[in-house]
Length: 289
Image (tube, rainbow, N blue to C red; front, side, top):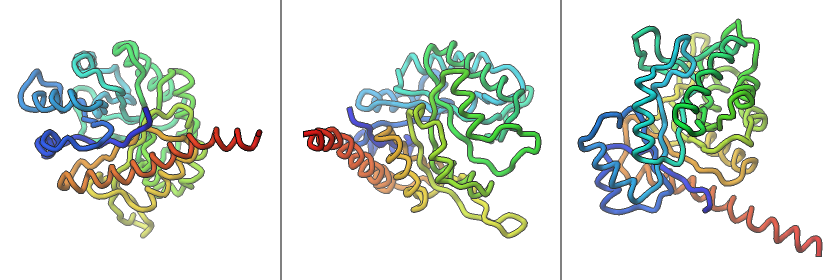
């Protein structure tokens, strides 16, 4: 099966999706929104899962926290995965817990040997508990830590080497982080451990300025994908080949037709890459002949 474009599933769109059965590749949900035992969310998700592949995206494991993972949270996640049998499960390179307090944010980490060991141990724990590979998403960052001894790319690459996890390449996060940190986004994508990418995310960001008047981008997920992010996505697909791609739009959620149009845009890129990959053996054969 060729790679398809999917959409983040929102409650506002349950009925339009079930009534029209749109041509999209898959839907993705935040796992924490479906950890209850039943009710309307599960009823709708079950009907959608009967018609489409599903991906689960976690926002609450706090992979980078300086404390043990929440075993009860992992157990709820395991039950959810067994119930819906998603094609993928992903989480963030971030932390969001301190003691018993859950912070409603995905916070950055210093890239040190200590952090590397802790994150790798937590990913090993997750993959063992769930009996499946986890995908780790590159972060959108706003600050850098003086104590960091790894670059972000080296840090992510070493995590993959130690744990065998897969990667989720969030192209919007690349552009946000590179703008905020004054990195080169083209180089970032070119040097990313692309061989381990299993899924791509695209989303919108909000422009702002920092105290010095320099561009500051917020990973807001509240608008359409920016043209510059579409361009970086094209670069990523050129290097990766066709890869399952998700449109994220989490706040100020638009009508279903607008969200579907974003997925259609991604599908055009994927379909072109698929045709190119299929034609390449023919060109090689013709050249050899």
